[in-house]
Structure formats: structure tokens, C-alpha cells
Amino acid sequence: MTFKFKTLTAVGAFALAAASPALAQTEIQWWHAMTGANNDVVVKLAEEFNASQKDYKVVVAYKGSYPDTLNAGIAAFRAGNAPHIMQVFEVGTATMMSAKGAIKPVADVMKDAGETFDPKSYLPAITGYYSTTKGEMLSFPFNSSSMVMWYNKDALKKAGLPETPPKTWPEAFEAARKLKAAGWDKCGISTAWTTWANIEQLGAWHNVPVGTKANGFDGFDTEFRINSDLFVKHLTNLANLQKEGVFSYSGRTNTGEGRFTSGECPLFLTSSAFFGNVKANAKFDWSNAPMPYYPDVAGAPQNSIIGGASLWVMGGKKADEYKGVAKFFTFLSDVDRQVKLHTESGYLPITKAAYEKVKASGFYKQNPYLETPLLELNNKEPTENSRGVRFGGLVQIRDIWSEEIEAALNGQKTPKAALDAANERGNQALRQFERTAK
Image (tube, rainbow, N blue to C red):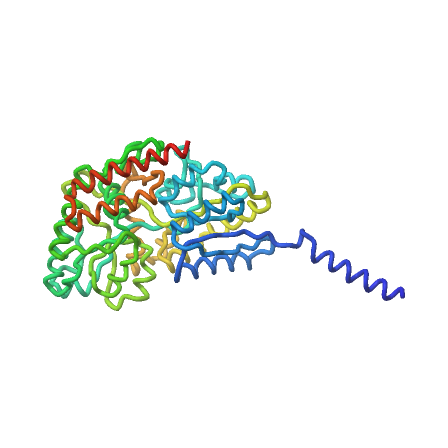
């Protein structure tokens, strides 16, 4: 009997120990919007973090497109079951900032958890977008990118064009005409993300404001300026080239990117994060270059702005859960991990140390296309016109702008009338957002 009692006691003690909260892992929910190869990156990062320690477990969940993920996160917060980490694309920044209590600034998360965290160690062109005017980081940069011009070297050669890509918009338009004459009759040049390319990046690259109040950084009481001369001239050029069959509209988002990898569009402006798809699918010699600029605009080119997304920490969680989030962000910031992410995925390294390590290794000499967006972002010191855009409700406003751009490209409106309407309708949406944000 004595032996039996001791055995049961030992078993019972083991069972109690196994059930003890001290040994249980704290789960960290991470909602994201990555697909394909980028989804694999997210899953692998979580697996590597989970294997590196025993206290926390990051659980990833794909929630659809960027807008879908943002909407799902907001709905979940209202229902009281938001994730710990939510990936939000850059145009959702103002929406996240305005949601009182919905977020916990990443600077506070790291400080409270006692994790080493120096905002100055991150690339300023990236962190500036996700910080307050006082420099407090609100979210954690994750998959940052910028816009570049991808070009088909084989097509340029066949059309009798120099292998070096066009630098200005007039040169790009002329090259596109020659490409059409050489057999690319469906598309000489095109862009993805039509408002990002032809309004937001266009303004920053030429140091021309998209709106007042430093493009919304200095307050929600901002007004648009997208019907100024630069924007009207550019849309007029695109509309005329659309009629000629030289420019070919590829949609509001990035669904038309395959027109480049298939060889249909030899000049194509889209995200630098397109690298993975180009590398995997393009059956021709390719590279990328900085966005074209208008040489008659004083000071152009200025600097580009970032795209991609950052990781926001949601409010209302427990202290030990926030500690796990902080440790995960420290894990993501590791220099060697950032180097690997950058060189394999094409997304930008978020720290200065990672960028310098890649540069010192000579990697960019063999792979110059991965440095192009970094050179654009750091081309000149950002101004209040080129730091980025932070307009409330920009996700919905982009659709308004796209509608008007499409009307101009289809010949239903003049470019000036379309941009006047886009400006007015956008301002109405800003005022609505401002009322709800107060």
C-alpha cells in the first residue's frame, strides 16, 4: 500500500506541474495580409521565434487583403477579441491612430517590457512614417517597400533603346512609344496601385504637396491639393497615351502586376516588393530603376515614400502578453535576421545596421535592384511634402480618386475636371473622418 500511495502521489504531482500556468505558453495572436511567398515568410518567422524560446507562442492567421485585415481587426477590437499584433498597410496609419484605446504604441510596449529599443537604430525614412511628430514610434516597421520602375531589358534591346532605362517621364513616354512600334502594342508602360503611383508617390518625388498640414501629419483638419498643376499635367499625359495605346491602365491595386512578368508591359511601375514574383516568373532579362520624374519641376527628384505595412499592437491585453510581443519584436530586429529577410524577400531592411551590413558585403553590386528603393527613400532629406501621407479614411479615399482617374483615362472627363472632383470628394471624406475621430 505504501508503494502504491507514493506512486500515485508522484503521478499526481507531475500532472499538477504539467497543468501549472508557469509552464504554459502564452499565445500571441498575429493577424496578417500576406499571400504566396510572403505568407511563407510570416509563417517561418513565427516558427523560428517559437523554437527560439519556450515562454511564448506566436500564432499567425491570414485575414485577407490589407483592407480586409484592417476591417477585421477593427471589428474584433469592438467585439473585445482583437489579436495582439495586427499588420496594417501604411495608408491605414491615421485610422489606427484615431482609434482611441485600440492600440498600444510600440515604444510603450518595448519600454514596459524592459526590452532594449532605440528608434534611432531604425532607418529614419521608415520609422518617420510610423511615429508621432515628437518621434514616438507607434507601430513596428515590418514589410516596408517603395515604388520603382521595373523594366524588361530584352524588350528595350529589341526596340533599339538603350539598356539603361529612362530617367524622366518624357523619356519614359518616348520609350513606351518605341516599344509599341516594336511589337508591344498592348502596353508600352503601365502602373499598379494607381493612386499610390500617380498621386502619392508623384507628389513626394517632386516635393509637391498632396494636401495641407504636411500631408496630414500635422492634424486631421487637412485639405487635399491633388488638382494642382503637376497632377493635372501627369494625368493629361496618361490619358493621351491611353488613347494612343501606349499607356495601358492596370487597375487600382496590384492585380495587374503579372502583365510585367508575362512580358506584356515592358515598363511597369509598382512596389519594390514585387521582386519575389519577378525573380520567380519573369522569363527575360530584367531590372528596376528609380521612378521617372519631370525635369521641369524644380528640385526633382526629391525622395520617395514607403509602402508596405507595419505591425500594430492592440490595446487591452495582459502584461505578460505584451512582454511576449516585445520579445518577438526584438527577435525581428536582429541584424542577421533583417539581412536575410531583405536579401530573400526584397522588403527593405528596417535597421541601419542591417542595411550597412548588406552594403558592406558587396551584395548590391550583384543585385542592384534591391538597393533601388533605399536609394530613392534616402535621395534627399524628407520635407513636409515628402515624408509620407497620413490622411484619415485614405483606404476609402483611394477608391474615390481611382474612380475619377478612370473617368479621365476613359475619356468621360477631362483630367482637370476629374482631379477637381477627386479633390472635392476627397475633402468631403476627410471632414467625415474628422468628425468621427473627435
